[in-house]
Length: 263
Image 1: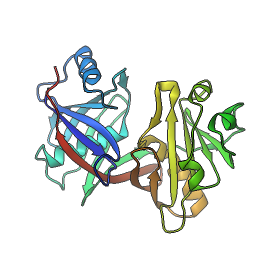
Image 2: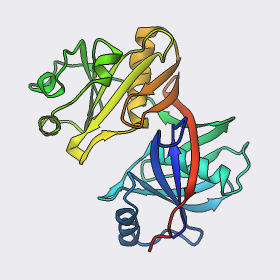
Image 3: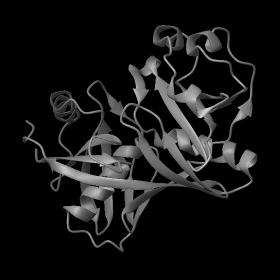
């Protein structure tokens, strides 16, 4: 399988969230073969694209351990690959058919944008042990779908987090989004995302989290278009726009190189 390495939401090499992209013109291989390829590649996600029509693809995503229902950063990586390597016209919006419904992307200059449903949060009491597991005082705690979103007091507190991942994994939720208002001259807000219950201690750049962060910060900042930084080890730069019941998440991406062909 011809596989390409793409960094999504990366403004420099070794930044953003990496994904492998595989074009499957004759249809998807078996699930077992795609899973084995993902294990061999060792990347956070491999995206397998089957062309259906011009600008229209069916996509499946695999981590080294399992198939995913949806993966925003690997969809952005796929769009970058198709425009940069696959010969797709830069002005053509793309449609990706998934098990969770269609996803839409488009290119805007050097950035790639994905259109996703908004996910609203609601206030909750912090679950027992959450503040201790994160090791920082919480200023608010909310829940959206199956993730918990907490705000802390400063950018520095987000950057300095050293969570107890074993304790976080015991809390009844999919993942944890930790955020703070941005500093002067920086992004509107910052975040980090942790999914130890799924076997991923920290997601380098999480698109789905920004579908929750967008309405959360729009209420607090009084604006619909915001800049965001994910303060993971690799880091990522994004812009988010809240538009009714949709969120547009955009950022830079780059094709890095072709990898050794996978079995």
